Amino acid sequence: MTDDRIPMTREGYDKLKSELDKLRGADMIEVTKRVAAARDMGDLSENAEYHAAREDQGILQARINELSDRLARAAIVDTSALPKGTIAFGSRVKVLDLDMDEEETLELVGPGQENPDKGRILTSSPIGQGLIGRKVGDTVEIQVPRGTIRFKVLEISAASI
Image (tube, rainbow, N blue to C red):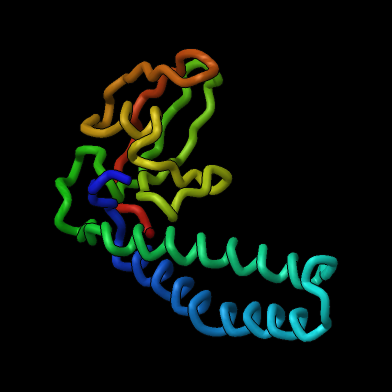
């Protein structure tokens, strides 16, 4: 893994920390009990419950490791200190899709906060990278896997992330 810092808001950090605490606490205790109960059933070589519980334990540990790494590399960004009028991490942007003639609202967020269905896109995504540094009135062409999209920036505000 790289040593890159991961930008996130205090809210995003706290959300990940809360998830990590739950995984390390209640969830790990539960899966450990399942492993122990399945082990007590006898022959481990033919014990499907034991193997399923061990697999769940491995998946849980992988998620714990991922969250621990993400939190260790977190760089808390104070969105109120970001420049006004320029698109940056933490911005909510209203754009006009010039090809579809539709308005969209996008929020530029860090890893773990993305949700494309709600318009929350990663700053590291092609669209995020294409919008960073733009101002109201700018028109931008962005290469995405399905071709080129064209946006006109209509409005910039602080996101509620």
